[in-house]
Amino acid sequence: MKASAPSVAELHHISTRFGSHVIHEDISLRIDRGEIVALLGGSGSGKTTLMRVMALLHRPQSGTVKLFGNQVSYAGQDEFELRRRMGYMFQFGALFGGLTVRHNVAMPLLEHTALSARLVGEIAQLKIQLVGLAPHVAGLMPSELSGGMIKRAAMARTLALDPELLMLDEPGSGLDPASARSLDELILRLRDALGLTVIMVTHDLISVQGIADRAILLHDGKILADDAPKKLLQSEDPTVRYFFQLKIERSHLVEDKEVTL
Amino acid sequence: MARTQSRDSQIRLDGNTIRLSGRWTSESLERALTHIPRKLPPTGVLTVDLAEISALDTSGAWFIERSVRSMRHDGREVEFANLSASARSLLELVAAQVDPREARVPAPHFTVFERTGHATMVMVDNLYNYVGFIGEAAWHWLRVITLRRHWRMHQLYDVVEQTGVTAVPIIALLSFLIGLVLAYEGLVLLSGYGASLFIVNFTGLAVFREFGPLIAAIVVAGRTGSSFTAQLGTMKVSEEVDALVAMGLSPVEVLVLPRIFGLVIAMPLLTVLADLAGMVGAMFAATVVAGIEPGAFIDRLNGAISVSTVVTGVVKAPVFALVIASVGCFHGFKAESSAESVGKRTTQSVVQSIFFVIVIDAAFAILYSAVGI
Figure 1 (tube, rainbow over the protein chains, first blue to last red):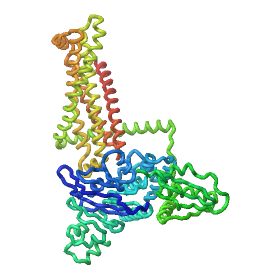
Figure 2 (cartoon, one colour):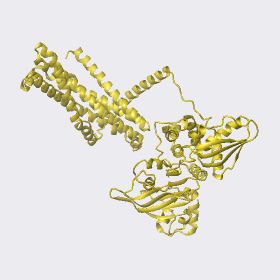
Figure 3 (cartoon, one colour):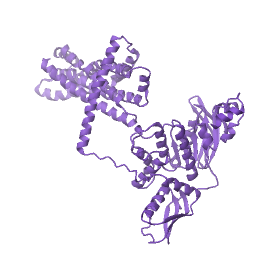
Figure 4 (cartoon, rainbow over the protein chains, first blue to last red):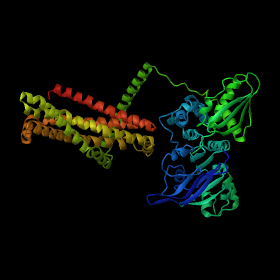
């Protein structure tokens, strides 16, 4: 588990376009084991697409992706092997509507391991409770869940195989502030206990400051800033300041109040 | 990927110490399950030693935790040794949860009687709701007429094009083939009596009265009824229907009425097309098999088939259209928020509209014979 800090994910000169619309232009970055990285940026800045590129759900027009030290070829069986080591939580949960929550969580375990159905059931139940859902929720159908419960159930399913790399698309959106914080805590705890690497797309600045080791700000198809969240808050760049809602014309006094909350 | 060695999880008993080694993750855990020591030393404190573990995840942690719990349940004292900080944190996290074994919800079990009763209630409920839906649609229709609200002509044209024009090739082809087969089979029988020419009377009556309207209705139920259900069902799931309500619009007026009236317009036209294509098929078979000239065929048809025969067939078409469109829309609105539910409703919509089409067709046959047409 404790190898000499190899990178978990690397992007080299990634460019993506939808038609003639350029999303990313020559983006390179590296994510190390155990990091919690927040991807920030305005709506439509390509945060989710960049994460989908890393999750091998979207193939970029040019550039290379390296995951766990292996260069991705987009061919053959290797991809399946790599995907098993990653977990992707979709923004709207993407729970399978025809299965109960427990079955949703158990599915990857049943498909990918040789464990008995009974033990899988117990592990699925455990994960459901781990993300803060009440035990009886396991028996419900996704259509019976509230927005916040869907997020948690999706998180439980993403964690089913204890992936080394966790990718979360707006984990806190749609949650009340208290639930969002407890989800943050869970992410931190799992990172420490399992040595996870976490990449998350988020708009929740409190969560970014609370748990992220690094924040990457995307703007106009490029990485505008890539630093510890604290450092970014002291940035002089007007776009960075605008994004963090630091009014440029205001004094430093106001800054502190608005940011720390 | 050569990670074959020490991939498996192992358990060894060493005096009072249970030594765990290898990878204790969901992928490699099954090995340990087959090597659980059957006999534990009878007395003394048991020590679970995790020194040789190379990987641990929540599945592994849960397996260790549940084993330790059952040993403790048997009155043994158990302690951990050589826990790394991360392993300790993980075991604590797992131990802090409510025992997942207690949360087992018994799978609901229904007897045949309960299932039958439930299915019956669902059917009654569906019928009740369907009648309500028809009433609602009729009320909105009256409102549109009396209040001279706009008719959404653009949508109406769209529906006519989608349900009518694009269905022309398939309905023409199928009717042609049915007419052809009908004439061919009939000629086998009739030529034996030297009455080949009567094939014109036979196919004319069958196609205009029954086959034309039925083929058109069944194809439309399959391709249009299903698409209505899937469209409205998906709109319901993505809350587009609620969005209309929130805007102060009536989903029935905006979505259902254009579909029903569009289909009511398109269906008689498709029926006439099916009639004609069916007769062309029959004519083709008659020419090839019995040598009846097309001109003679048409002359004979003129005498054999009256306008009223054609009308009795075409009159059914708007009724079929009403049923297909309303059943399709009804099931669309009944879809719940899942892809599975939309699929289920689409199936029901097609099955029920074809069922109703055939039942109504039978009702027409009885009606016609009662009034002597």
